[in-house]
Image (cartoon, one colour):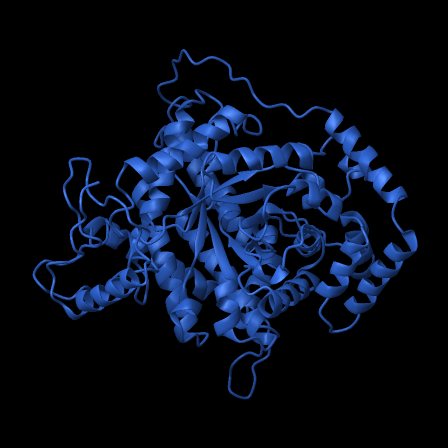
Length: 579
């Protein structure tokens, strides 16, 4: 292996000196990997680049590891730690998905990400009449803590990070995960991972809610409190822009709606009396990486800058850690085409590279066949290898924010930031509509001004109409031929053959329902009823619901039983009809 040069930069500005001191400190602590940081031609490269004449970098751009973190959270970039390869997977029953997880980890995956089936996402058991025909088809079926045990069988939960993509019934599913961890003998305090939990984006885009917004926010606040006190490394909230973008938003809308939702959760934590320095690091983000390469890079850079400024200047966060925006990225599912599906490998690689150059902390790459079905094992391996080729062969890990200072990228970053700020102004203004003014001429908010605006925007259908308009405009440009999709509206001739796709057998549903029946017959029914009733009683107080829900999961209460009890207590939410 060639000897790496000492990390120096020709710039002599104060900013460069600050960066150099941070880099040297990280290196002294062993936080720089022992790796070959040269080009393919053995040319040495610096850890970061800036002006060569000693001039200062504008504050809005800065240096890696310093406010406003436009160029990344760490002075070492990916020289310190590469992004986590976190492949999203789940299908059929827990046994089948467990086998896929083991394959992902054995072949170099760095973390797990759980996809749940539709009944689970809606808080329904597999034997619920509404679940008929859906069990195991778009993710794994989880009915109780026993399924979670099987899902993570022989996987060391204390050593791996686990992300779970679920929002409506996120808290009871999280409790089942904790019970599975207990049954493995794991100290819950050392668990690390992420729970999506983001209910705002459900009303805005994905439509997988259980209750009205207020009880959902109560559960989220309880979860934030519980994790801050008991599981400090676990991230109880992953604020999701992915589903907003997949619904048809623009890049700026995805960024603005997502960060506004994040500000709402900050206001929720503050309204609970939580210390922002403790709970803000538990907020993470989940973005889409689409095909406009430079726009996506600019979006990610702008996201870090906006979040840091708002957390510091609006919400009072003082430490870097509380101002950091950490984010996971998934390549754009909506960009995949059923026509000429092998083209999807190229699309995914480009989108993944944009996420990496934008500084993502973890990444999922979609499989080429996901527009047709759940990924086959071969397609899942290609998606995994796409990340590994980027990480091991391209040199993108050698230099922090290599596009920093590009006139085009910096201009795009500024423009997307400005568009996002204009959207924030609209959302906050919506939160004041119809509200009485206080003595100071302002408006009093139950949680906070951004939260009020989000709730009003949901009630009025504003978010949905904005996304629908953006999606319509893009579709018009496609049909006119102004925007091109290879294999769809141009270059349509092909020799591509039909793919062999993964099919989930109907036996998965019958077997899951039978297993659930056996499980129910073997449990202590009195203990289940008492635990669920106690949970409902806590729901009628201001107490934290997580411990009671955890007891219900320990008693093998099912997801449907827990959620149905709360539906009876809180009612269900029906989206108002709009024309």
